[in-house]
Image 1 (cartoon, rainbow, N blue to C red):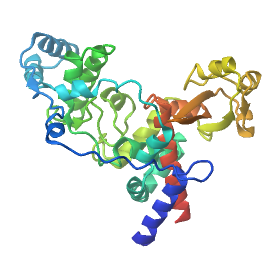
Image 2 (image 1 turned 90 degrees about the vertical axis):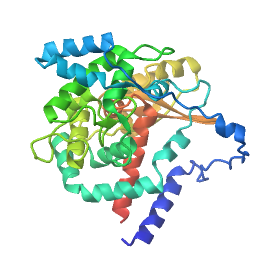
Image 3 (image 1 turned 120 degrees about the vertical axis):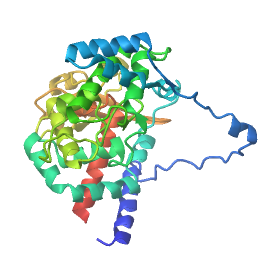
Length: 366
């Protein structure tokens, strides 16, 4: 299809997707313009400069213990770790957002299902159609789910992170910020996995870049996920999630299969919830975890769709808040739950589903 027609189709389909149930546009009201003053320009937060850990005792002890466990040269690893830096920006970014802001599924979806990402997604699907079909055949994960996930994670490899992974992981392992639950033990384990990965794959640990949390490559795998679930899908003898879209595709499908993806089962079904508040609270309490059978949903006053009534497994009642509007509700299947093992958020999972589904529709229309 000529590019002009393709762009028009992308914009048209995006408008349909963002329309409300009555067909009205979901576009928000225009924002008020605010005058930027010299004071507001100079008041922007500037993070302090990163500082090298050097021969800090806890860092050197970590390197010595890992070297002893793996049979590595302790002095060589300690020399590498001494060059890792504690990065204040990482400490800031790992903190939760400010409380009190209302969630808005429509606004969240619009960040991902938009013309530029759709155009990139179509190109990615065209370029990697064979690998996507093979992954779907082997693992049962539909191509649209894989394409949707990679598009949400990294805009098809365009946004993979600019932090040195050794800095991000070391900061969170040894200088985890106060003000939230301490996860330094988790990040120490991830740092160890990253160093193992670097040795096995012949990577320079001081050169690899990723997100502020240490996630890497097209699918943004944490080091432990790379070591457990990443696969060589292009057959070149190594796993490369940085440069090989095929390896990324196969690894995403393998990851979801390992977390319980079931071939041929929908990700979600429609449902109407009871008005009675106690029953509604019971239905929403498990959040994204599949808990209720169809008969249990009926007993609690929910009205599942006909397709949901035929679902043999358990389902979760998922709430998506819509800002000031009333929330919407869905039933998430085991496959929806598998998607949330990638990112523990129902909004994330639905963004993956919606992006993939829209791309599939565009391909069929084309």
